[in-house]
Image (tube, rainbow, N blue to C red):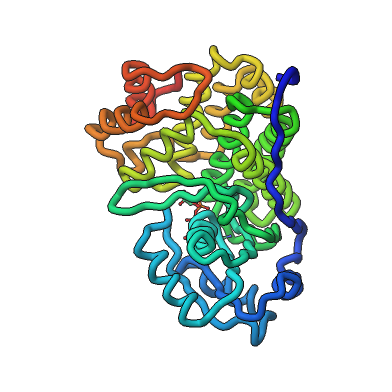
Length: 353
Ligand code: NAD
């Protein structure tokens, strides 16, 4: 892999550390902004208001309707609020859904974004935006949507439920796994990928035991940053394509879908990507990455079947068709028969093969 590669890191200012959300006013001021729009989901409205309170007179508007998969109608309502209040900066406090809304607004307005992530999704360090319209999810890449400032404050993740911590953590690990065998992989991103898997693999079980373990929370958020950076830096493969199709078509929960699918795609790709999977296994401290991910998922008690997430069995054929229609580069070339078998196993909760 070192013979020839391209490395093009994305520009972002990243602040990391417990309590650093308090630096929000200074970061907004450094952007030269005076009229902030605060974004959150309905669930995190109070948390966002508490974090943004020190902005005082700079906080001129709020929108707490962010939703999973960035539905177009939500973006349009938020856009109206941004225009009405003549905002000049977007402040997002939350997981990938809230970050997605900030990015969708930045795409349409070119406003700068300060994102304070509270899950492990990693969207804050990518220039990728997924949006849904009429049940179809489409993805674009644009420098316009890359947040200018990211503040990682592990204290804000203490309230993330153990179940969501586990699935969100596996979502992050999936970014790193696919970065290791990406068609445009490079040595620096692969180092981040290995370290990201290691950091999350070591801390997620501790978080499940004690969700308020500050050291484990800091380690997991550090891992999530690295994994998110991998997602933003190189192309993703079959796992992300499948999750994208499943989430968009059947409205399945994003992080849970990643958690179910990861061990299956890891096993599927293993024979075609031995070096990458060897590195993933090393990062997990196991012999075999496919088995390692299945064991980690079992330890974390994450959902094991697409059926339980609400996918109809007859949807398997649709998912296979949509995946093959415009598949991403993948170490093993997918075909209808093997993909159908993979999805059947993931749907029913059979062991990865
Ligand atoms: P989410 O943002 O939808 O959060 C899930 C729920 O948990 C929400 O109700 C939220 O309010 C709550 N929550 C989040 N953090 C919390 C905390 N610390 N304490 C208490 N409650 C908290 O879920 P997600 O998995 O982070 O994001 C999923 C979305 O992100 C999807 O739409 C996905 O497509 C997108 N995504 C995009 C990218 C990208 O690069 N474009 C990357 C990853 C995910």
